[in-house]
Length: 173
Image 1 (cartoon, rainbow, N blue to C red):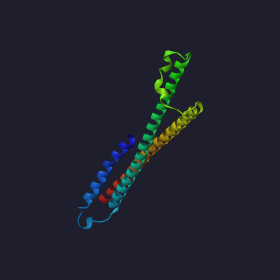
Image 2 (image 1 turned 135 degrees about the vertical axis):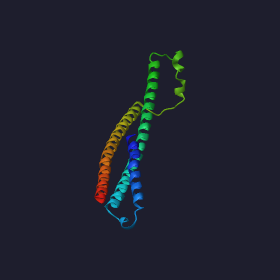
Image 3 (image 1 turned 30 degrees about the vertical axis):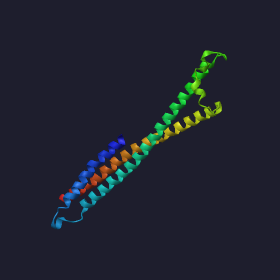
Image 4 (image 1 turned 120 degrees about the horizontal axis):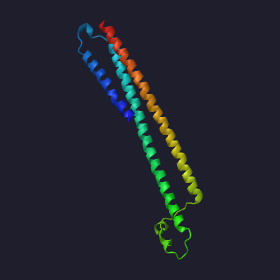
C-alpha cells in the first residue's frame, strides 16, 4: 500500500513539472532560450520517470511475492487439515475391533489411495516449513527494499525540486 501510495504521490510533482515546461513553451523572443530552468525541469521530469519505473518494477515483484506467500499459506493450511484428518482417524482407530460399527466411519478416506509414509509426511512438512521460512525472508527483504526506495526517492525528488527552484530563483533575480 505504501508503494502504491508513493506511485500516486509522484503524479503531483510530475504534473507541476510538465505544466511548467508547457508554460515555458509560450515564451517569446529572447526569453525562448535553453536555460538552467529548462534543463532542471527536464532533469526533474526524467528523475520522476526513473523513480516511477523503479516503483512499478518493485510493485510487480511485491505482487508476485504476495501471490507466492498466499500459495504457501494455502499449502500449509492444507497440510494442517490433512494431518488433522489423519489424527482424527488415528484417535477413532484406538481400541477398535474388527467388528466395530465405527470402523467404516472414514470410508471416504479409503477411496483415496495414498503412497505416503510417515517419513514422506515428515519430509513434506519439513519442506513446507523450510519453503515458508524462505517466503517470509523474501517478503521481509522486499519490505526493506520498499522502505529504502521510498526514503531515497523522497530525498531525490526533493533534491531535484530544490535545484529547479534555485534555477527559477536565479532566473528571476
